[in-house]
Image 1: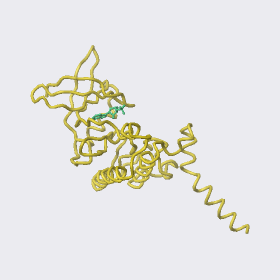
Image 2: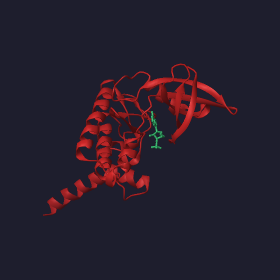
Image 3: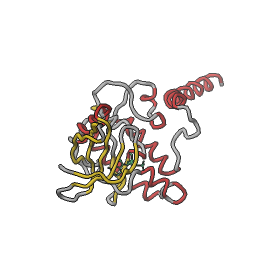
Image 4: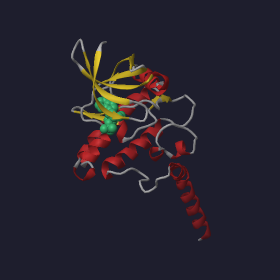
Length: 227
Ligand code: 3AM
């Protein structure tokens, strides 16, 4: 497909996202680009996204390799989501938090997307409001750079603040950990802040997420025994 790049929408941790237009059809889409030599995450995302079709997952539109100013770029084409990320929607909303009715709709749509992924044996591993995109039709799950097959062993991936206790302890990252991260995303929608927002050090967050509940349980057991 021949296409032209439009304005830059934003820069994520792994790639730059721009608006693009197909020269043949005039269709508008989003393009995620990074230098080919650093495109491992994006190619991984391409493999996973190209196998998925769901109204609750951002659609895959293709990929190519281009040369620009002596740089070889890897480009991943996606459905354009004009309202941007859910985290932007939360920030832009009155008071920096969403109404309960809207939280209910977005949560339902994210759950539909997760149900589809999990039925296909995939774990997203990085659910959070900045990885959910919004269009007229509602919310869709995006950013599959950390996703994996459920049986796949490998290093723990994702964002410390959204990690379930078993993920923080390095034990396993399965379907349940996506649901935990959805719970954290609901906290974002309802409060405008993230879980552990008062703790800035990621190592401390991982420690607290992984062990705090166990420490409290131990303390409560000891306390009851001493009474
Ligand atoms: O930096 P912000 O949050 O404004 O929402 C995504 C983020 O914007 C946006 O690109 C930025 C870097 O990830 N983005 C990602 N995929 C997109 C898509 N398919 C998208 N915006 C529209 N459509």
